[in-house]
Amino acid sequence: MALLQPFFCEKSLPKILNFSPTSTTPKVTNQLPTTSKDLVSRSLKHNHKKSYFSVRKHWKKCHAVAEEIVGGLSSSASSDDDQGEGVILSPSSQDEVAEYDWTEEWYPLYLTKNIPDDAPLGLTVFDKQVVLYRDGNGEIRCFEDRCAHRLAKLSEGQLFDGRLECLYHGWQYEGSGKCVTIPQLPKGAKIPQSACLKPYEVRDSQGVMWIWMSHKTPSNAKKLPWFENFARPGFRDISTIHELPYDHSILLENLMDPAHVPISHDRTDFTAKREDAAPLFFEVTERTARGFAGWWGREKDRLTPNYIPNFLRFEAPCVLHNSREIIDKNNNKDYFSGLFLCRPSGQGKSMLIVRFGSTRKTPGLLKIIPQWYFHQNASKVFEQDMGFLSSQNEILMKEKVPTRELYINLKSSDTWVVEYRKWMDRVGNGMPYHIGHSTISLPKDPAVVEHAPAGFVANLSASQPAKGGIGDMHAPNLANRYFRHLIHCKDCRNALKAFRAWKNAFSIVALVSTAVAILVSGRQWKALLLFSTTMCLAGIHICSTAIAMNTTNFIRTHRRL
Image (cartoon, rainbow, N blue to C red; front, side, top):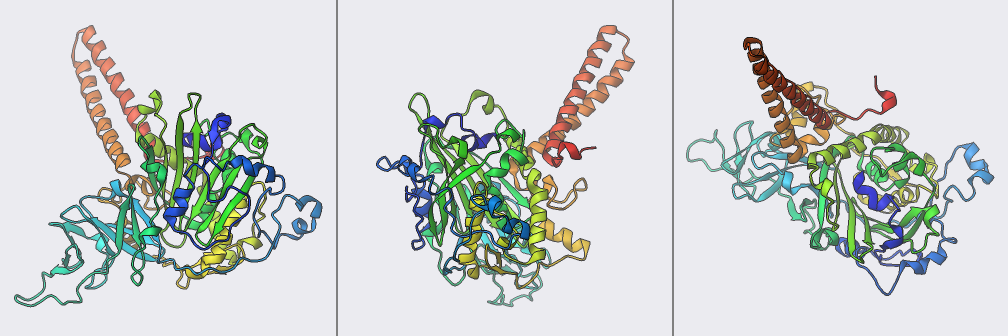
């Protein structure tokens, strides 16, 4: 949460400059789809000729430029015109439907640095299961996660001399996907040509592995996201990955909802305080079939001299980017980015890559804080929202109606949520399933429910990295921090192993020093050995605390025993 300060804390706002979007007027564009690279990079380019100040005069007329919004409110809410006028977003005509094919997009698979070197990794995009691994040459390969023999998961297999081996019958596949070894084949017999895997194209871009899901349409490099700030000299970021037990649309709603931060994350660190909850304003400056963009900020800050609000951009299929430029008292410009890459990993599941970074030099104290500490703090943030979002997901699936019939969307907090659900209205016809603002299409094939515990465990273990595994200390479910984050993060796994090793070492030394202290007769030796035991016990406590921080979920104070 400390990394959110440039976006939520307004102490430095008089010195903030803007990222110029495509349009710096409040007029909402409905232009043809633009490439991802163009849309993202344009939001980061500073336009010296057109300033955000040119649109400030329109703010009073355009409190929130969101054309369509909630209907189907409760009778008491919809009939109370005095209370609803100027507060609830008012309805308008439905947006036109755009051509869209969910497979013709790049989806964020994984942080490249966390891809295992010595085992395959099973991942999912919507309902498509894929296996990702490094071959003998270190090249990253991706195929459909099923053996050509009898459909066993290849992610349950292993790497054997750089080849992907199915551990059911030992069939091995080379990097091209062709089967090269079948142990049961008679001597001299040829391997069937049909014994091959269906490949998926993957690309490493700025530390993230992306996958192109279509087998019919060649990959479109122009759609591959590129983030200008992450390529700037001196830009440093903290990247984490989390698997979450609710739909990616619910996750995106949550991430583009700044109004909940002071309440849900109160005192998580110094950037979130309950008393800072206040009305927000939103200014939509761009709306296309590829997404939307605009400004947002606190209503009370609008009259602050030289105030420039936050700039947010959502880009199809699942990229959310918050950016800002700040000029300090020495006239030095720094760039800040909050990037959220949300991958739909199945019905009621999603995987999120979070990247916060800037070109500002890291303060001295922050340099000594290890990565795992920031990661566990991020896990705490998601755990604070998990109960709300999981229940929201459950109700939406039970009600089976668009969000306009269930939500009460406010101008002062929910504009981005409405914009996102309206975007789903426009492109939902090209998705496997969607719940839009005014439309809905349910999955053709409901999610498979595992009835056999062994099948459930096998399915989970197939999606874990080489060193993740299912240990006896942790329940195999996505409500557990160990399985949501730690198994996907090399830094945190290494930290956990180190703390466990140190804890064992401290325990042995404490036991030995205590035993020797009992046997020796000299007072000085006894004092020295007992002091050593005390220090070891302190070390055991520190290690136990660190282990718990990495593996134990956050519980709100009023819920604790």
